[in-house]
Length: 549
View (cartoon, rainbow, N blue to C red):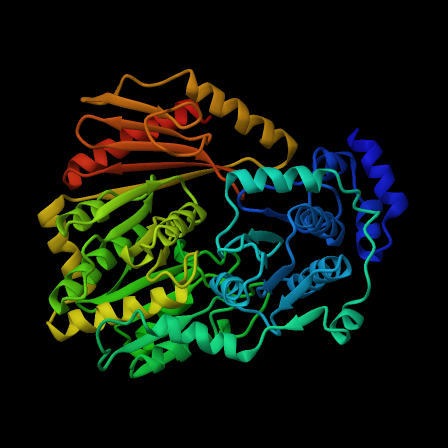
């Protein structure tokens, strides 16, 4: 079947660049490009750009958009908000999507320029759009792009909606989609640019989350060629930051990421140039946002050296800071709620619970955090939401959006550093105090890549192998519980291909295939001391290598 699809594409594709790519493909490339249609899941579409049914291109974007338009028709929906990031073809893909929706009779609100992903969530809510589309591949390498879908709450669509949309998209012939031209639709007001006032309202809502004034802080910032510039520096200056030094080589949008091949703030490479600037500027804080500005990497100056902090550490520090400061000021709500993912450290949970907060655990993916905020909103309790975060460097303070937001995260992190600095402390000082109180939590993430058709099959085989080969323990720690989220009934969570192994001394292993990349991710945590944690990680690696080989 894959080869028939290839021949059909050769016949139907009109775009010269894609046609040339098709004609140059060898047998293996044809198979990888056509062995399946790119899958639509709760993360929408994400994949390599190029020709083929399993790639991101103008035809798969049209197919997805037409499928969603058909879903909108059957559900009596009327409008769409669209935003895009700095990636190659993001403007093109956003306009193609706009053409499809507007040609089907739906009102389209589209940004004039690239904007952060959380701004799309805000725009959906502000314009009361029924659907939101964000063209982005987040932190993936330059060859990738993607298509995220949001519901009317401004939250990425979760399982039930994603499943429905996938069915509609599947029934669309990508070569049967016809549209009017973007300029014609814009002239007749079927497509409308998002007003500058929406950005002003977004910034106002971000600044409302500020707790304390920021005093005399020197910050170095990098947007990694993405959407964080100029909005993050603008917010930091409005909040009182004395000096914001932007990494010049990474300031302007560039989909090729010439200074950083992997624009992921979790990686050392992504912070390397920023650290050089921070040292030159003698900054107390380095902030690095990913291309669509929904995640942020942090490094802090401590005793003359810069230390990178993990997502788990920053999340725990934010929980500690926000609860502590709001309690001091008497502004902490009576029934505070923190929402985190199941792969995120329990350190933040312990901190939040010490302030009487309820902690809600959700599956991996910020969409599930956004979903819980929406549930609270419908119960008239959205003000009880204090913090949502995940270990992969995503945080949200405030209920004005339903997605992680690096703009507000940068604001609160800078404020936290400034407040601690006024008391003669750094983030590292406070983190060590938290470890002394709650235990020394360490975490490691292992990622295993499985590219192409054979890799896709191997991932499925490995997950089945793990399901049938559980370890009895980890060294001297017995296995206390094994949770298979495909079949478990213990927690009120959607079914998901995730395994959680809990051991008697608090160690934990979580294994899951990525929803957006050809990866299996393994999360290992230990909360003993340095020596014991190291031994735990070694034993965990031995187990992981035995099942993912």
